Image 1 (cartoon, helix red, strand yellow):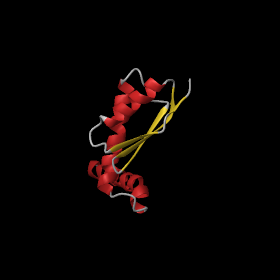
Image 2 (tube, helix red, strand yellow):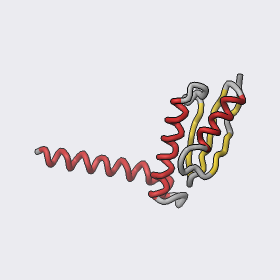
Image 3 (tube, helix red, strand yellow):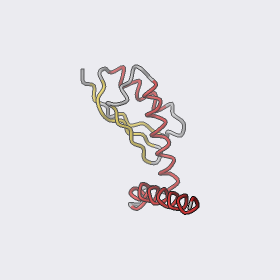
Image 4 (cartoon, helix red, strand yellow):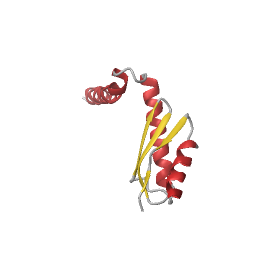
Length: 105
């Protein structure tokens, strides 16, 4: 019984991974490996922003494609926008940062 439950859980997890990675991979935008790398970069950038008290991680969106990080959303000051860009640039495996954050006081 435990074996069947574990097998069912593993199958459900595999389907979730395939479904989640299928979107960008199916459109030939990136390989499964780079999709996973990009997800790791996005997670790392968001985690660093959450730790930084000068950046509102909830107001800034982070998306990554092939190592290029796209930042969007709103910042309260130019300093916050610049700090978010610096955090992204200094994250491992980031090739380029496109900072489209809008400063809105």
